[in-house]
Every structure is written in C-alpha cells, then in structure tokens.
Image 1: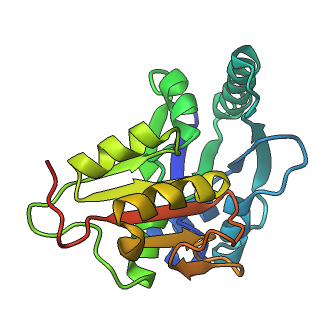
Image 2 (image 1 turned 45 degrees about the vertical axis):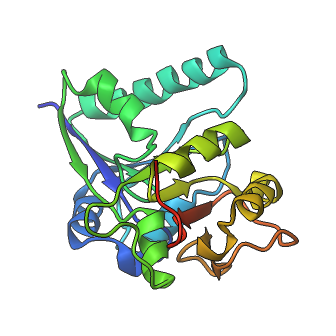
Length: 235
C-alpha cells in the first residue's frame, strides 16, 4: 500500500496559531519531513510543531533545499529531497511535510508535490500566513471593500516597488530585512512611512510589530505591509 503526502502550513511562529487539523495530521503521521537550507540547520517550522504537537514515534526527516546562487545546485537538492520523501511513501508511510505560514505561499512543499502527486495521494492543509497574523497584531486591515493587494516575495529594486505602489491599495513585501534601508528611502520619498507596518519574527520571542525604523536591524523573517495613504489614489 502506498503512503500519503500531506503538506502542512504551521503558521507564522506562535504554536497556538496552528490549526487543529494541522496538529492532528502531524500527530498521526509516520514521518515528519522538515525542510532546511543545510544539514544540521535548526528548523523554525519544526520548533513551532514541537510547541503544539505530541511528537512520539514519528521519524523526523530533514530535507535539504539549497539556497545556493548556483541554479544546478538548487535543482539537485530538490531532486534529492523528492527522492527522500518518495522513499518513505513507497514504504506505505504517511508523510507530513511542514512549512512556515501557509503551505501554498512560497512553500518548498510545492516542489515535492509537483513531482509526486501523480503517483501518491496528496493533501494540503493551510496555515496562517505571517502577513495575516502580523496585520491582526498591528490592528490593521490588509484590504477593505473593493481594494486590491499584491504580495512580493522579496524586494528587487525601486522600480518594481514603485510600480506596485501605483497599482495596488496595499503592497506586502516579504523577506525585506536586508533591504530595509533602501526601502525606507523610497517610502519616505513617496510619503508612505506613516502607512507602513513592519512585521518581524511574527509569533516568535524576538517579534517586532511597528513602524519602519531605518537604524534597526531586521532579520530574514521580516514583512512590510505598505498601505496607500488616504490622500492618495491608485492609478
């Protein structure tokens, strides 16, 4: 009998934000596949799981997804990750592959799913994205009425951000930590500082929710929610 592959979003950081369905699926799984960037790396997603789930006899399977700038190295690591998960499925095991936030938003699970879904039963269990949890903590909406928004996986350049600000009521920039000073200058020039919220390490001990501060250092898990100032209209 073939196993089943389940992709599970574990939320942004607070174990209490995991869904009941996610907790149950992880606790019932034979194998928990934990994506990491390199061997031995500590997984934030798995720390969340340990805070919400009873981990007993499950096999913990680290699966490496290289973040190398070399495309071939990234492709090879994905192939090896798929092979490792497939081996468990072929043994009839139920594999729960976890991911921060929601399983369908920039998740490494999708690489595995695309390769294995034709051969094995597959399921996806959603989780709360960091920008949704962060907006709630900041006591702001993301969009209202007939407004629109866009999610950018990272900041690339001023032109890209400028176009997004002109076209959408709300712009969400993920993984913005390393470019915060550059983004700050753009937002200050365009008059968006007062309507920008920083969501850093949401749900974690080092969480920061507040205004953008150029002198402050922000880590990898930093998201910006940039709302259109009330006096402005999108094109």
